[in-house]
Each structure stands twice: as structure tokens, then as C-alpha cells.
Length: 66
Image (cartoon, rainbow, N blue to C red):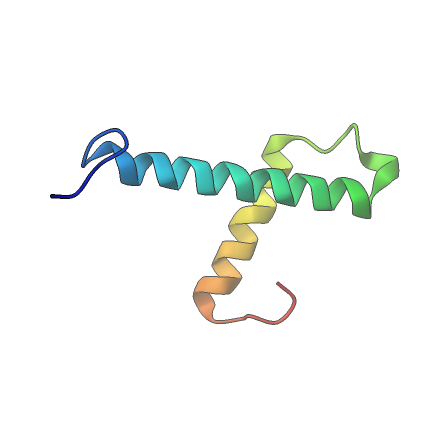
């Protein structure tokens, strides 16, 4: 019998939420290190746009530069 952390339906949602938030935080940290002069201007909207572009490139099979 499988053991679930929360429930059978909520565990995948929880894992997806944790994964997406970790990816967004990593992209934000990378952007702040890459552009320290713009660190205060980098918001979550820019991070979501960049993450969407990266996901689109990955989905299209462009693995160079990721």
C-alpha cells in the first residue's frame, strides 16, 4: 500500500509547486548575479517571462544554452 505525504491527488500538485518555485528562485538568482546593477529592478514578472521562454525552447528541443 503506497504512503502519501498529503493525499493521492495533492502530492503531485505539491511536487509541481515546489519544483516551479525552485526554478523561479534559481532563475532570479542567476539574473541578479548576471546583472547586479539591475538587481532591484528584477521582479517576478520578468522571471516568469524568462522561465516561459526557457520552457518553450526546451519544449522545441533547443537544449543549447540552457
